[in-house]
Amino acid sequence: MRDILVVGGGPIGSYVAFRLAGMGYGVAVLEQKEKMGGRVCCTGIISPECLSAFGIDDSVVLRRVNSARIFSPSGRLTRLWRGEEQACIIDRAAFDLSMAERAIDAGAEYHFSSPVRSITVKDDRVVTEVAQNGTGLEFEARAVVIASGFGSRLPGILGLGKAGDCVVGAQAEVATASVDEIEVYMGREVAPGFFGWLVPTTQKKALVGLLSRRRADFYMRKLISSLREQGKVISDEVEPGYRGITLSPPKRTYGGRVIVVGDAAGQVKPTTGGGIYLGLLSAEIAAKHLKQALEDDDLSPGRLAGYEREWKKKLGQELKICYWARRFYEKLSDKKIDQIFDIITANGIDEALLKADSLSFDWHGRAIVKLARQKVMSRFFNIIRLPSWIGAE
Image 1 (spheres, helix red, strand yellow):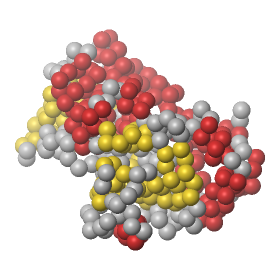
Image 2 (cartoon, one colour; image 1 turned 60 degrees about the horizontal axis):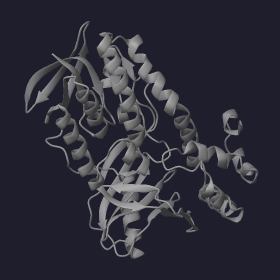
Image 3 (cartoon, helix red, strand yellow; image 1 turned 180 degrees about the vertical axis):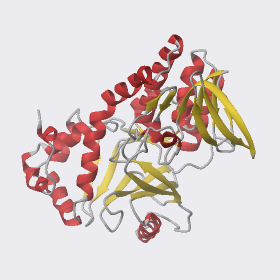
Image 4 (cartoon, rainbow, N blue to C red; image 1 turned 135 degrees about the vertical axis):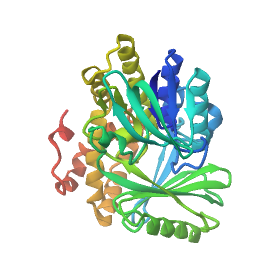
């Protein structure tokens, strides 16, 4: 019998598999796709710190950036720039493949075309029912890691609850003319309550995308057509991809012999929908707690609860602040967003934030709190009552 089954061979599941297989445990990854490295609806922007901390291969990096152009609903431009590198745009398909290959090299076995239909937790093991190439099979292990991404039914089946608030992400690769900086577009005509983006990847290619609660296809087509009219996109004959994104965690992310990580656990930035960094941080915590539990042969809920306590201690406040900011932003009219742009630039708040250590690609909460404390912004915060912790020192 194996030690660990990992449901989902994306980068988060592969990282857990890599860490535990590297410790000498028997690990099998059950992945519903036929192979790794296919098309992924994800922009793939991570920080240099993430690249370094998790040993991500430089070969998957397409571009390194230190600036972005942000457009308000009326077209007002704010350019954010720092002298040092701020983010890396990675090839998501190559990244996924690289993470899986690293886990395989460490000793993990991968089973493709193996969607998991059910998980049964017994006193001494977990049993997964898998439909592998049309044939029903069972895999057993001492514990299971659910890393099956957005919309997974498995946590709910196991009584852990469903991940909360969710949105749709849309994205397409396009041919471009002369775009060399990340561009972000705000406004209800672009992506109501959210934002759109144009992210250059290679010299003549870029990713266009947006987040939306409704009519994602309509707004996506509209954005691509607008960018073509501006000469930023050469052709609008593209086929977008779509995926769900979870913005809040389920009731619990652990149970007896069970741990949930990544998108399935709601470990996603509510501000941007990005989940690579937070998912990898949580995967590292999961691997640590599983190692200890396996060593002691204690995979009870009480023992694995330490995983949730630790990841929430590390990420909980960040997710709470960012989710509040997300809901606040969704209530703003285009006029209010433009006014905020004007106040930020007129009072040098953008320059102050750029110079502050609190501005981080990975950690948005500190910058949000710093912005919320600006006295000049206070008149706008009467739209939603500020939580007491936003203004606390």
